[in-house]
Length: 358
Image (cartoon, rainbow, N blue to C red; front, side, top):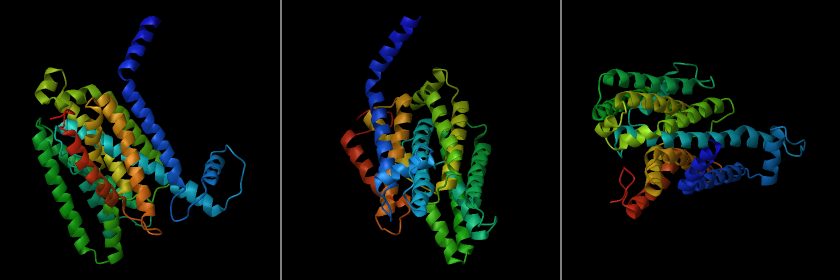
């Protein structure tokens, strides 16, 4: 039995050696970028000092030669921000992978079902109408997550007896339009220019408000979501072949679709609640990964997670340093970088949704 297991493991590693190497390289690049980005910003801090500050706060060092301000910037501001950016990028990317497979539509992204529009309406209402005391730390996040869950409930009731992904997409578009119009009405009623400015900045996405208290919730939501999607990788592969083929292969497409939508909705609801609307990642990263590495979701999902994290971290670095001491909303950077790169991939690979080439 032990010999059989060793032989199976050896064959498995040989067969998937390239993908394992790619995942390992992505991990190394991500860790290096995380460390480099900590020292960058309006106040540049020496990387040796950065290392010592992190080790000191982890209880691994007793050296104490930096100021309280430097400790505050590194440990309490930049490190949580970097971790949140990585988690958000990973969550958005894998959600896009799953959504495109579930509806078999290359234009699908995590926001297409109206979940983000619901979150935007909730956050807009909190900021503009003071439905909850806006001075409370997580009032906007609570409003955004509540709006996201409300939009998911509406989507469920509109499609509870439906087996057609086309109707699901149309319902999502209608919900998105509805909540977007609600957000627009609220902004029209809000006469306070500062509140309107806050709403606009939130809608463009940012990880600037990250802190250690929000990291555990986002971490659990994203990691559990990624693990569940990897578990469902065979069903997702079958869904790419079409619903009839998937059903022939023994996949309960209706049940699977709602299971995945719930996982995606919770991930997106929590990410949008804390980071605002960060567009393009859930749309472009899955296509880039499939065009370069194939369509097998066993590897597409983890590779997408790492590339999504790397991409959003790079965008956050640019957003922080391009107009020092100010910073741009991260959603602007994701679109400016992602769109041209995606056009390049399309032209170079002649990519189609199933991962093949024309």
